[in-house]
Image (cartoon, rainbow, N blue to C red):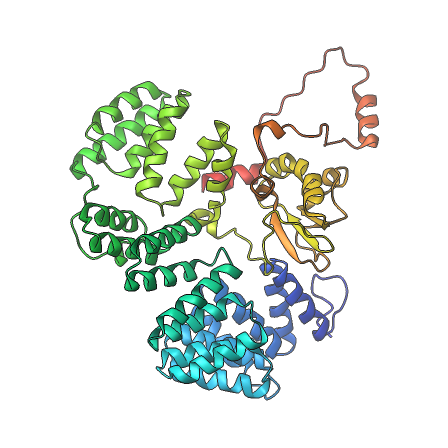
Length: 515
């Protein structure tokens, strides 16, 4: 038994605790999963299942050395399942330890010849070791069992390409994208192959498609710059490199920037400080005048352009603010702060289609990435889900949860799924009185098994929400009848009219925004 003095109310067996830990992880509740694993290890040091899960979590959160250490410990057990060895093989491969990777992958397929993920990993490792014939046989084995596996198609295409079988490789890249339209790496790989085959226009289309899916896909920018050079378009090539330099300067060779600032660092610093002083006094028109003059030649650092758009927005000059942010996103596609600001402007001005599309990148900014939940199930993208279970979960503050609860009913109607709604404990009572959910659970507690998930604030994009759809069915929020009666009694003796004033949000949320 686990220690009954631990804060969890009831004792757990190690096996039960481990099942719960994995369930928490699959539901995107990493903190709860980690706590249970650590409890297990206090009772049974080096317990393989707990070590494995901690390694997987460390890998997802980019703690690679720690991940390998955990997985090595997990696979020391003679009873370690094939999956443990397979995952360790992939982590070794990503570290460049190909000999260790191959050894682990072979242990995995020996332990369970039906584990296709292990054969897939072994095929990739063999490819990187130059054993291309064996790599092809491993990956074709995967596709024989699962012909709809986009990763296996992509990996086999990589091997075939190295074997000089370009047309077969192209076929499998196309199959990878056919089975997963969001597969960024398949876009990149197919783009690169088409460039070699001389299909330059289609190659450029696929690279731009990759950027639309992932604006920080450095390989796509490099592909486009290379394609522009081949097509004798040096200025276009330089623009793509400038866009890449904004978020991955180490991937760009030292070259002259065509869109870089011509202002001296001293001028920029002085202007920036003056703008901040004016902002502090609410003098937005003067900020606009100063920055318009400073940036008159069209060049300047993104920071100043951001500040100019902010000054324009403060004066409700939305169109010029939109033009500036659209320009920044166009030339610096991977700068997520600009995309978030553009999303906000688009939504404020009623362009919901483009606004929600830009808003989907909200967790790629540095200060928000750490709060993104890694739910180990596919995201719902608006498709019918009859007979499936859809987890809709909150993600930000109370106000956001309260505002977007109105869409849960529409999501149920559109998907046809059984809806599991997950909210923070403080919003539970209010959410219970809304419609659209079949089950409701507090964040941090385990929902029942589910097939797909969607964040509350992603529902507008997946539902194609437009201004004409608002406010929707109202009212959708209802007060507790008992509380209504209580306050009616407490306020009965006061003169009318009664005026309520909300003067601040939740203090912790305000503090978080200042960080």
